[in-house]
Image (cartoon, rainbow, N blue to C red; front, side, top):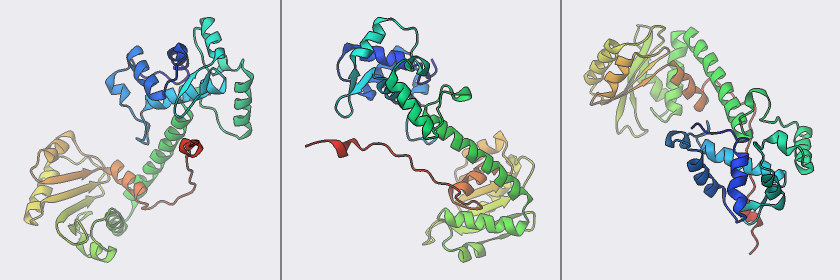
Length: 302
């Protein structure tokens, strides 16, 4: 089954802890994965940042919220166990435990009130009812990033050939290719057909070279264009190539490139804009947030 949201996990987690022994979130995740029949594919799903499995994050937040309501308590790092209040709740055989259910406990109300005073949006409102605070933040970030990528690609498609050349050169240098901008600029030049091409060093020592071709195309790039690119690659005695387009590639073109003996990387418009964001090309930082968590080792007494 799909991964339940963190509020749906509250009751199974509390039942898991009902043996009154100490447990870790890792133990809870393993047991709930089996109990809820979460598939291996869903179990491996990560948050957008790729830093944590979604299930681990949701179980962790379920534990946090149950703890704020006094149904679970932390013992020693990183263990928790059920409280008498938690046992009393289970004795009443609730059908569901969620944030609305936890509002009957003054400690949880105080916790929510502190969050509201801090202007921290709750994840259980409207369309984000199933999201933990981490998920709400990360998915919001991804939406902002995707909007920015679309704006960048629109600008790139409207840019002049000279501007497009500078953009590609700057991007390649920021990615670690071609040495200096002057060296890369000399290597990558206009081809006269609406695109640019050239040979660029793969590393600063010039131990290997890469053939580059970049085109501001609106139409989808098919296999014939990639076939011609490969021919040019061999003609330049290059074993590696990067084809950059502002549009996209057909499935046949991607399959052809994937089966080549030489290494040919296809970068479409979406990937181009994402690389620009990753390497700071055409973008600037407006705000920066650091996500911190408690360092339990700091509080561990010898």
